[in-house]
Image 1 (cartoon, helix red, strand yellow):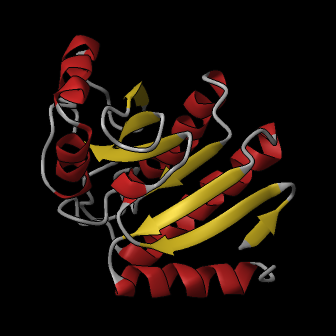
Image 2 (cartoon, rainbow, N blue to C red; image 1 turned 135 degrees about the vertical axis):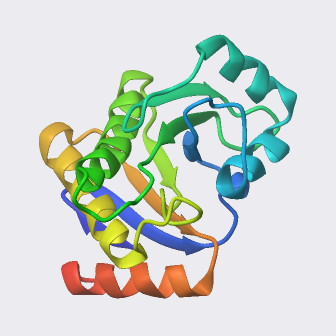
Image 3 (tube, rainbow, N blue to C red; image 1 turned 90 degrees about the vertical axis):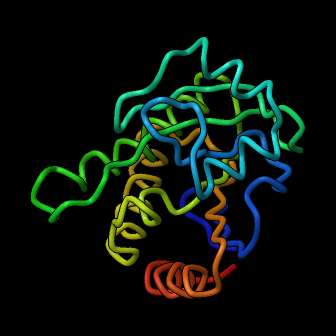
Length: 178
């Protein structure tokens, strides 16, 4: 566990669908109708109610976020955000990825949610380099805490050991382990 201001930051190797937090974040596509990776896992674990709610929302632009209930999962809500497809790093991908994290936290605050769990957004089939993406994620979270100071707990939930080790190293470079 690490601390930034009054917020506790955790890195967890595991399955985001099993997190008992106020909100988990879904690395969704623009349609919000399910897909592969984290998106598919969340839709499967949450059940058909999530898809029904996503259909009513009608999609989500890249960098923005939308919210549904969590269906059959132990969390209360799913915040669906769309990260960028990585092309060459020169098409504003960093800003769009930053916005995906920041806007997810803004939505959590709007719904009075105190804990949030993030996957590694855009680093699967969207091809974002994992090291760079982890730095953007941490910057967005820290900036939100600086600006709003609202969230009590932020979890970075990494599915692979490789991703977990990458985040662990990043956190150790930036924080003292509590």
